[in-house]
Image (tube, rainbow, N blue to C red):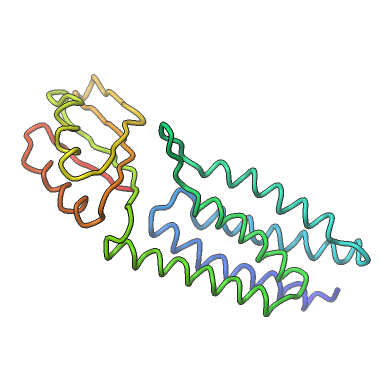
Length: 210
């Protein structure tokens, strides 16, 4: 395979993935720019190598990539009790490995079509969230003074979330500070409005939504 073809395939894969990865990072997803780029470009490079080394049957080497990325994607899942979050991110990583393979073997049309469909799903999902269609899941990190108790925080959460689950607690005794991390579920508009209820509490110091 000539160098121009190799650069073209890697370049298209890199450009596609950078755009998507930056959007995921901007949306504060657990997997962002770097991971998506590494997965897709690595898959593309391996597909190019497979076609060059085993031109008669490159499928075996490329299939190993798809299987391996499946295990990597499992690391993006977050478990809370009987609920698991992060399926979209995990599936995206697996799909971008396939896009990298398609572009790596020269299937530009199919790779571009799959890539376009990914963006269609992302924009549709964002539309549904903006219009409060379906549940909205986020990780909420609340920082408060030691005057606050877990029950004080959860008495507010219950007002605007359908479900909430404490997943970690951090106590900074030196600075008299408490940090609680929750997985919350509910309507987007209700959550955005409900978070303001914390502002007038004397023990409240800050919060972060991911």
